[in-house]
Image (cartoon, rainbow, N blue to C red):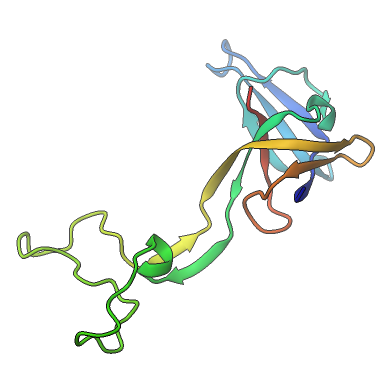
Length: 165
């Protein structure tokens, strides 16, 4: 089974947001201590915890389905064939040096390119979520989770792991 190993935690509960004070309920978690503060701080709603509590891999179980979100790899400026899956132009019938071009960009009226037209541009570096990934193995001592399949981003990308239930 192809798996991806993820270092998951421990994350420390830094603050408890309350309905009375902040207007919503959430937990503020910190990951990777850097002196007195943390390198990564993020708020999560719909989870419970107490201040100064450590949340680690022990909150998950083997066989559980999870949703993993992160920033995908950036691919720079790409053409329409790679970016949007266009099939390109003919190899014959008068087409020369334009096999991977976009084609027509609009109609005769209105005399401008409409908003939202799929064209070449920057690709990747977007927030992507992969659902229904099964946890194959959990190593509590080293804070590792083995997940079946691939996760978004390059090595070292910060990921958000949520239970599907």
